[in-house]
Every structure is written in structure tokens, then in C-alpha cells.
Image 1 (tube, rainbow, N blue to C red):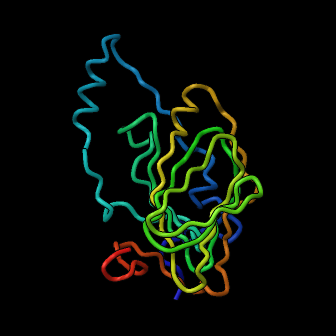
Image 2: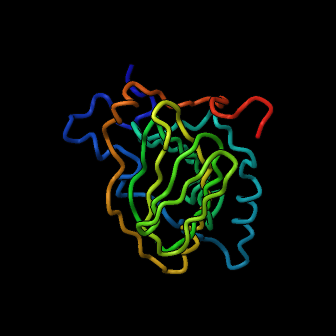
Length: 202
């Protein structure tokens, strides 16, 4: 079985495939424009008419095959201007890209266990923990389980920092485009499943 959540167009030439990954997009909207009358009445009416609940079933995971993302809220959606909310799933033994940025981020670990490397220092985590990535930190996320996935809800204020012209962001190592040996054939969990929590909770 092949991972089902890759953002690659199956009909695209192989040489073009990496460009289809979300994390490799060159035209992402980090901050959207706000236009209208000085009193912004029309903008407020537009915002109040936006949906207040975003359904997971309407939003598919992208990227993979080691790290997948489902983006719930970001400025391009027209709902918010100041934060970005997304769900991350790391396949068995998987890892994220290695990068750094000015803004902070918080990862609530929904299930699984793993660790971070922040500026060369390791920090271990498990389900129920909150991981804080501080400002100006080069970091990478790792699933420590070779058999099960790990999942985290990520909240970050990147759009607000960019809105304030604090523009630094740098990728050191891109997301892997090949699965780990233990993650070969892994399919991301599009539906919510409880694969890691012990019965009765912690």
C-alpha cells in the first residue's frame, strides 16, 4: 500500500513532484490584505459571516510520507490574520523538516511519543504533553515509535510576526520525501482514531 495523504499529483512528471508538496509551495499566503472603507464595516460583516467550525472531513492531510499536515486555519482562508492552526501526524519512525523561525509555536501531543531537537538539545515528549518551540530556535520533530504514529495539534503566531515585518524563516533540512523502512506503506489517519492512549486514560 502507498501512503494516501501525499499532496503529489499522480499524473505530474517525476521531476515536478516535489513542487506539489505543501511545504515546498512558493506562493503561500502568509498575511492577507485588508481592503475596504475606513470604518471597515464590510470587512467586519465578512468576518462575522465566516464559518465558526471547520470540519476535519472537509480538510485532507498533505505532504508525507513521514510527516503529514492538515491545515485548519491560516490567513489564506480569510478567517484569521494572526495565527496558524494545523494538525501534524508523524508516521512510524518519521520526522519533520528541520527549520527555524522568529515566531513561537506550541504543540499539544494528542497521541504517541517522540522527541524534539532544539538547537542541538533533545527534549522527549508523549501524549498529553505540550511542546513549546521558543523564538529563534532551530528545531525538528521526531516520532520515537517505529511501529505507531504520533500526532500533535500545532498553534503558532507566524502570521502575526510576519505582519509585524519580523520576516526571518529558514529551512535547514526539508521534510523527507521517502518513507522510513518501518513506515513503508503507512497510511495517514484521515479519521480520528485512538491508537496510542491506554484504556481508561493516563
